[in-house]
Amino acid sequence: MFLSPLRKKISPRKTVPPERRMLDVDGRLLPLTIKQNERATRITLRIEPGGKALNMTVPPGLMRREVDNFIDRHRGWLKTRLAKLVIDTDLSDGSIIPFRGEDHRIVLTGSLRGLTEAVTLADQKILKVSGLPEYTGRRIATFLKKQAKLDLEERARVHARSIGANIGSISFKDTRSRWGSCSSSGNLSFSWRIMMAPPLVIDYLAAHEVAHLKEMNHGPRFWALCQKLCPRMEEAKSWLKQNGSRLHAIDFD
Image 1 (cartoon, rainbow, N blue to C red):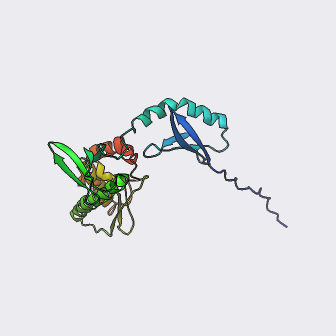
Image 2: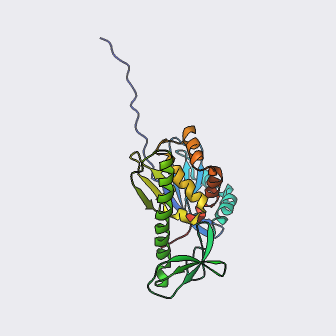
Image 3: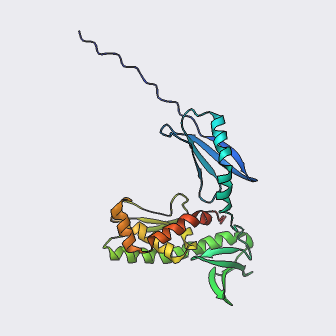
């Protein structure tokens, strides 16, 4: 009788729940989530879009003091990066908010009715907002969504026609992990916050997602097509990398 050698039964590794704590960074209290990842070989620390939370990924079994030492060594980096995200997030009368890349001063009309509109008065960019003061943020968000529908739908359809692609549907969301997406069925989705960026960046986002209608990847052919649709692509990507988190930091609620 032939007996096969016994195989050692490997017990699955027990899943360790994420550790959550509050971290004080130069007087700024932020929620920190620490997750163990079996494939991680080093510690990574990431600031969430908008600078309102921190995420850390660590190798399994890493001792707490090693995590604490890593955090202490990178407090200076955190302080510097978070300082760049400090903007006027108080959406009230007199506050400043960007629209299509230009700073606009919020002016409450005092009227309970009326549409939010961007105007120029005496060479000053103004965003006129009606309604109760406590709903200023929501009204501005609604305004940005409407403008996003106008700008992005127009630019997306122009780019799609230029490459002979068909768009399924176009939707607008407040996503934090990405500025846009394209599904396998040709449906495009955009973050309406992009309306605070310059027109070049808005056009780049439309071109980026339309390019995915032909290339569902981020390979060389995709970037070549994206560059063809938006010749100033690198300039737009650089702006979004430097300023994207600042746009996410604005709280419209």
